Length: 228
Image (cartoon, rainbow, N blue to C red; front, side, top):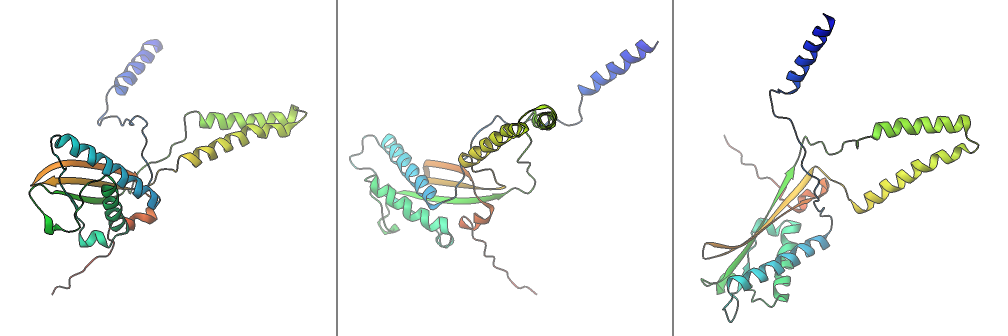
């Protein structure tokens, strides 16, 4: 009788594990995302955007004797933001270095002028679980404690038991050196190029940024209107 009850309980457990009121959360495959922490990184982005735009123009206008002129548009708000102003100057420089015709103002606009615009969007994550202990971490910790205790009791040179932990610490420091670490703040930088209301080129990049640097990418000044 007890055997049948045990089988019934196991059957209920199996059925329960195969049904959930909401979908099971699954993680994404491991990917990489760059972290933007210096003005040099802005220069790298401007260089890459200018190179890709030049290649796109050559493919879009293969028979043109001269590629269309380019005008980089910047708003008053962007001009007040560190990245907005720096990226404007850097992108103009890189486009000129690509031997493109770059206009200084919109006075020389024509139907064939390519207008370059860019936007920045800062994303603040409020509830994101960034770090988890790697599988086997607790087992390794317990094994390490056992090894140290065993070394003290039985080894002639118990101090040697510390070396595996110093090696693990050095490995972790090496990873921190090459992997700057995720943050709860990201920025999305989108560059688009239009000609006569038609999109010719688009580029969107996502980067981690240090939380304290978010004001490099968005205007934190707010205007309040007094109403009755």
